[in-house]
Image 1 (spheres, rainbow, N blue to C red):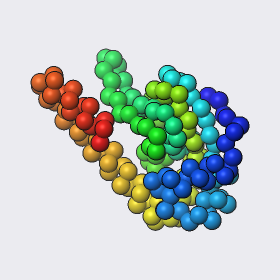
Image 2 (image 1 turned 180 degrees about the horizontal axis):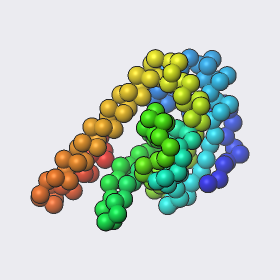
Image 3 (image 1 turned 60 degrees about the vertical axis):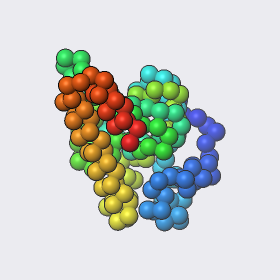
Image 4 (image 1 turned 120 degrees about the vertical axis):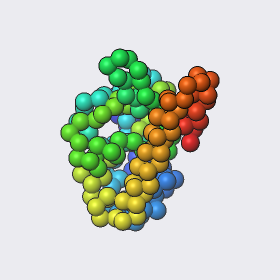
Length: 171
């Protein structure tokens, strides 16, 4: 993981204004309290943002490129969900207070990501209702995606199973 030096606070603020949860936090709070804690990281294809078993330390926003969240069973079967620019990942273990990540997060392409420390994430979640509601909707959408993937796996017809899995990745 490399930390680029070219990202300024102004760049992060401009990027945040385009973020899907931008309206959940007052702009003055974002500039004074949140932006100084954000860190930008670059990952190469195949490089892990985190691995299953790692301690969750931050909420991660995908600024450019794509990543996958993947859980591989002992038998080698994988459940994979993709995320692209604009996605935020890693909130579940932070909200649940989990000691470890339950999946891998891996860059699919050259990836630029921003990390928000757990303490900042917890502060926003507990003190800004709109942000907490955004997280609730995000987790409900993720739950629905997971249910769609499970349902697709139960489908006996292989072409239909593949089509449903691909559709679930795009919704």
